[in-house]
Length: 178
Picture 1 (cartoon, rainbow, N blue to C red):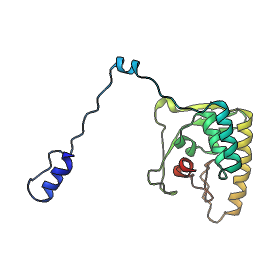
Picture 2 (spheres, rainbow, N blue to C red; picture 1 turned 90 degrees about the vertical axis):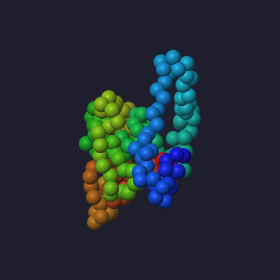
Picture 3 (cartoon, rainbow, N blue to C red; picture 1 turned 120 degrees about the horizontal axis):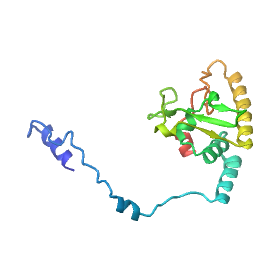
Picture 4 (tube, one colour; picture 1 turned 90 degrees about the horizontal axis):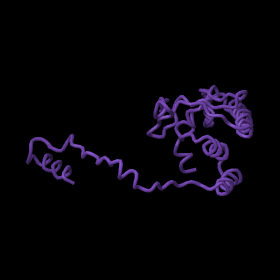
């Protein structure tokens, strides 16, 4: 509120500099007592609701929706971690996925992305996956190989599991709004 008033005054030449330019309001840190008293508002799907959602993602979703949402729900991956997964992170024999990176793409442009380290040190992890997920990923790899052949002139193979038709990683907004 004050920031705009000072900006206007600066623009009109009434002041020489904006005293609020680099000011950031400090956040109030909660006490231990406040944190302990606060009720957790965790929202999650019940088992039956998740099964219904995954069934709908299979019957009514976009092409990769069922695989994406199944992997997210069975592994607890963040969307950025999922989109950064490469085939080298998937170990079929051990039944695991190795999380070592996250996709950063603030402008949602398919070519302008960065692979960064995960959110925290503890976010680097290996996740065990069951036979159903292993089979889904194997089937997806076969389908992706067909897409590579079909689009071989434009496909840039960077090894992403969740790649677009051109080989670049899928966009976050496709998953969040899909």
